[in-house]
Image (cartoon, rainbow, N blue to C red):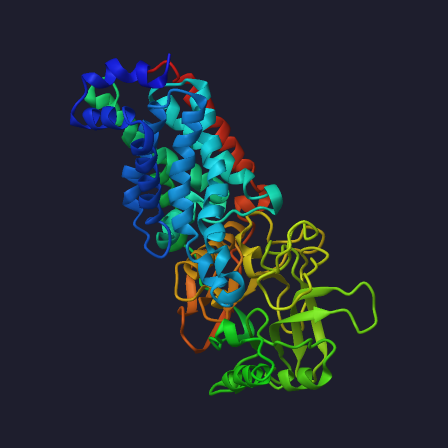
Amino acid sequence: MSMAASLRTPLSGATRLGALAIAVVDLTGWRRRGLAVLLGLLAALALPPVGAVPVLIVSFPGLVWLLDGSRSGKAGFGAGWWWGLGFFSAGFYWIGYAMMVEPEKFAWMIPFATIGLGGFIALFTGAATWAVYRTKVRGPGRVLLLAVAWTAAEWVRSWILTGFPWNPIGSVWDGALPVLQIGAATGIWGLSLLTVVAFAMPAVLADIGAAPRRAALAALAALPLAVGAAWGGVRLDSAPAETVDGVRLRLVQATVAQRHKWQDDLREAYLREHLALSRGPGFDRVTTVIWPETAAPFFLDLDLNHRLLAATAAPTGGLLITGAPRITPKGVQPMRLWNSLLAIAADAEVAGIYDKVHLVPFGEYVPLRGLLPIDKITHGAIDFSPGDGLRTLDLPGLPPVSPLICYEAIFPAAVVGTDQARPRWLINLTNDGWFGISAGPYQHFAAARMRAVEEGLPLVRVANTGISAVTDGYGRVIARLGLGERGVVDAPLPTPPPGLTPYARWGNLIALLLAVLVGALGWALRRLP
């Protein structure tokens, strides 16, 4: 018996909300698919920078009712896939901006990079709804199982095929710092789980049963999120605001247009522009100057003249930390290219190097290059090579730091190396100039800030066009340069909170236990109408 048939009698005697649920359950064909896409598009409004979280109270119950109306496993998969297509395509629209940096070469890829990628990532939401359909669970149990399956799908897409954990549903809370603190215990996956439970459970208000019971279920579903937010508020109220003695950072945001960045006749001018901003008023009071990803468009480790020039941005006794490409010396085979972070002292000595480990497919290298006759989107014909692994850098005058380049900051539980002493802060150099004035940089910053909360480590993020910011280990913004602003911002380096956060100590274990508990409860309630 289909889920639609099993709900026909209960819903027929329900209230006006029940009538709406019946209408959704009864949809077929293009109307059913169209509504799923619209619900996904609506949910995308909850993401940064809009942050319209209340739309989820419409979008998730609608998804549950579409799942209720599924008459086959294929339809159950389709409910989640079409919803995900709307959600992810809207959430990824900004990727198309990167194809317009060189439109003559890459504009043809825009549909594949936005709608195509959205459709691929939607396979995971489709798998989640298919799994719930296969259980045949009704009532509140189906909502709890959906939350577990949804969270499992988010976790799987964080690592499969190199991983792309962009816009997990828990990221909608970026604008609500007390709620974000839940991530210090459960990580983003636990926050996603609680979010789906809270916003999908109102679907049961259309089910059979006494109205007080239905309302109580919906209220109880929101309780863990509310309790977590209350704990987060207390955590923030009692959080100290201490900084590292003797460290003053200068974040430089030159806002260089991506389409011009690698022009041979402009590269030195852009380097000097970074120098001018770095050495502006207040330079004598900073100890560390930080530039964004590939801010120095030269191979500084091999190019002494340009390294000497860049070193003039390093304060006396301090450092310039910059993104720059690295390449094997001439004549060394095989030739390799790295996207790197370099720490350069005032005497032009290189005090530390980190090579990016987690590269962007099609952006920094082409997967299956022998089969795909296309160019990577970033400058140059040579694919980047991955570095040897995450590491903690010990730099003169600074606490130990974990470097992250570009989207390395979006991967939960993968921002700190495990074979060295634990760092005291995170540094994220990125170039969001690819994505213009769009939602992409806001979503990227939200992901990086979530890592700071999870790990309990201050985050220093420097982006070419923004958003550049310093946050403490609670995610509180200490200093910030907005998207599209040109200039510098000076800030102290916060000290990390005392001890380890539960997430830093146990990783995804708490989220796993929470998922097992919610899943077991959902299965126990499988016979409850």
